[in-house]
Image 1 (cartoon, helix red, strand yellow):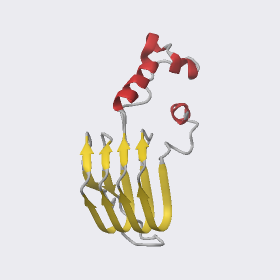
Image 2 (cartoon, one colour; image 1 turned 90 degrees about the vertical axis):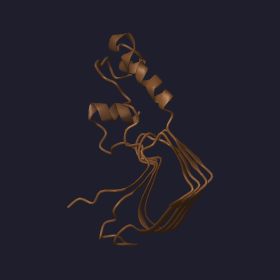
Image 3 (cartoon, one colour; image 1 turned 60 degrees about the horizontal axis):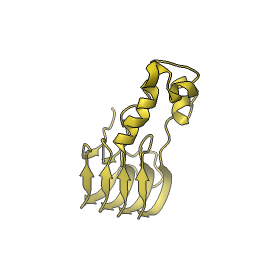
Image 4 (cartoon, one colour; image 1 turned 30 degrees about the horizontal axis):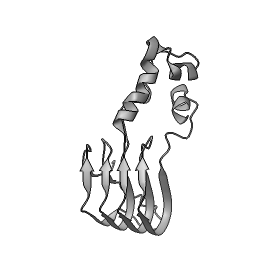
Amino acid sequence: MWWIREYLGTNHFGRPHIVKIDRATNIEMAGVRYLNSPYYHIGVTDFDGGYFHDFEIFVNVKGQLELGKLFAANNGHGIASTLLGGLKDISLPTFPLNTDGLDPRGKNILIERLNITNYDDAVAVKPLSRNGKYGQCSENIIVRDCNIYFGVGMTIGAVLP
């Protein structure tokens, strides 16, 4: 129930990822279906050598909208409102937001044959800190033969000044 703590301001850890890996080498991910992450589905940071292939990332927007109805039912007195101690005027969870598919920050990466339906960035290459153990910037990345449904495509992350 991370989202209840998020709303109440007691969640100090933020929204969880389904998979979060920091500082690694020679990662391979394949053959799994990742569903409905509350935040980025797969975040991999500071790594050298990644092969991400033949898996699916899926956000069930219909399920998200149905769950949202729990918060609106009976003028704010629905099941979810009761769980939150009678709080009204809430609309959790929000429409899929920041449900990125795969966010790599690393080097020497091959991404292929993914099926992603997530209403957000399918693959979002992010900058790597200059303090990285395995690299100083995201580089040498190939993305090919992926099917993106109801997403905003592939993006290269912004680097702040």
